[in-house]
Amino acid sequence: MILEIVQYGHPVLRERCAEVGEVTPELEELVRDMIETMDDANGVGLAAPQVGVAIRLAVVDVSHDPECITFLKVNGEDAGLDSIMPLVFINPELEFGDAREKDREGCLSIHDIQAEVLRPGTIRARLPQLDGTVLELETDGLLARAIQHETDHLNGVLFVDRVSPAAKLGLRRKLKRLLAEQG
Image (cartoon, rainbow, N blue to C red; front, top):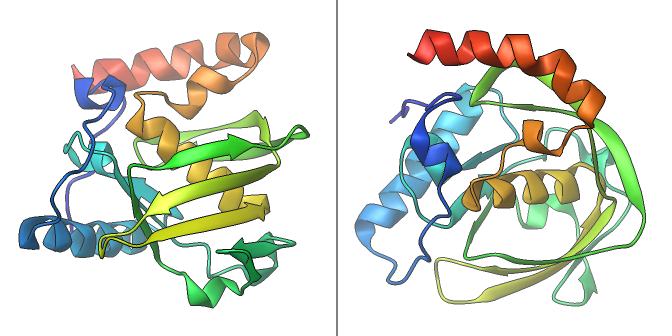
């Protein structure tokens, strides 16, 4: 089922989400609906708070662009994107590489706004799965960026919070307009 994606200004987008405990059939249904919603919206990621559920759950799928990464290790082994997509994770833990890269980001919860965001170029992630296993993942490129972006959502942080001060000034009017539309 396609879920409604909440928009900028909705309070759930600023919440630090609760840890996921028990995996229930309802949670598994939410995951299926989130993947369907992300695909329908042509997104590369979707976090539970974006559909109004304040829990530490996100989905990511960058399989449409296999060249978007230069490396992927899953549990210490080289892997291909197709082996983990769509990626579903709960209660993520991230470690960041030192080098930072700037790239353009947008968000399904902030329509019609994109901006350059500086983020670590590589990550190591510990991503618990619904079946109780844990993916230890190392990667770069769009996958690293998408995992960081969705994990930010779980902490109540939006990509517009991470842009340069000059870019924030440039976005101020657009963001006020979005707030007024939500009002």
